[in-house]
Amino acid sequence: PATQRQGVEVQAEYAMPGLSVYANYALIDATFQFTGTLSSPNNPLANPDGSIDIRPGNKLPLVPEHQFKIGFDYMITPIWRFGANLAAYSSSYFRGDESNINPKLPAYYTVNLNSSVQLTDNTQVFLLITNLFNNRYANFGTFLEREANFANRFVLNDPRTTTLVQPLAS
Image 1 (spheres, helix red, strand yellow):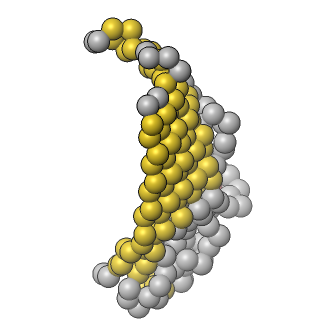
Image 2: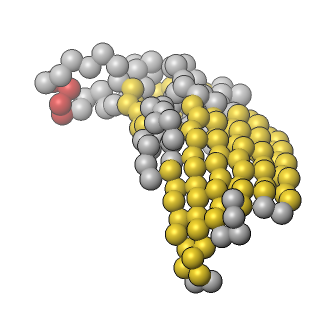
């Protein structure tokens, strides 16, 4: 019923002919501002009726409190550009854990590279490599249904489900 999103974002950029460098930091305080209950029947620590208790100050799920990005672009020649960036995110709560009672998703970072060659005024060849170090971190999480159809066939020790960041790709 009531949420609050507040924070600070700071960005710096330096540019000179052939080189640009940037850094960005965001502090995000996204919280609930009410006392009550929400339905979360798949949360393993939910009340017996499938509800969870919310208090003012509980963090909104899936919103990392800290986000940091840094990168550069460099003109190797007048037609060839190369760049790299790093993006880092702090931990966040799973979707369905608005009460903040379960362990968080871990913090993660990813490094990306890009390069381009301007062949003509209208033709450019571009290369993008994402997740250069092939980090295997989850950036989304929720809880598996307690009464899932396949639950009777498999022993589930952990109801948490996650989505991993994109693996190394180009």
